[in-house]
Image (cartoon, rainbow, N blue to C red; front, side):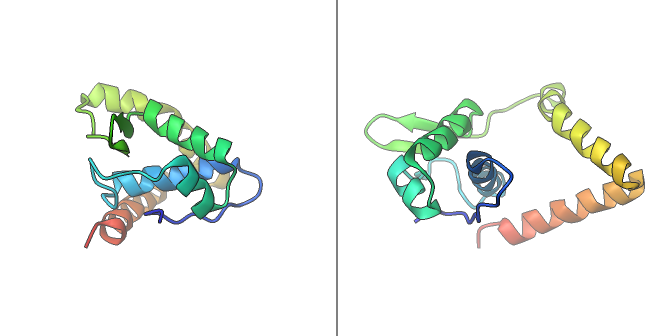
Length: 131
C-alpha cells in the first residue's frame, strides 16, 4: 500500500506527479522519518506506472534528501536536513519565481496570492497531518 494518493493526469510527466504526491506526504507529516517507503515494485503496481518510472521517482526523492536507503531495511523517509534560512530561500527561488509569474499573468494581486498561500498552508497542515 502506498501512503499517498495520486491520479495521473495527461500533460505532466507521471514521475513528476508521483514525486510531488510523495513529497507532499512527507512534508505534511503523513510519512514520518524512518518509515518505510514503497519499493519500486510496490510503487509501480499501486500507482499503475512502469517500474522505470517508479525507480525515477525514488531516485529523485533520494537526490532531494527526502529518502534514504538503509542496508538491510530498504528505502525509508529521511530525517529532514537542518538548513539555514538563506539555503531554504535559495531552494525555493525557482518555484517562487514560477508562481509569481503565473500570478501576475492571471492578474492576481500580491495580497490575493499571499492569502491563497496562507490558506493552502493551513489546509495542508490540517488535512494532511497524521491523526
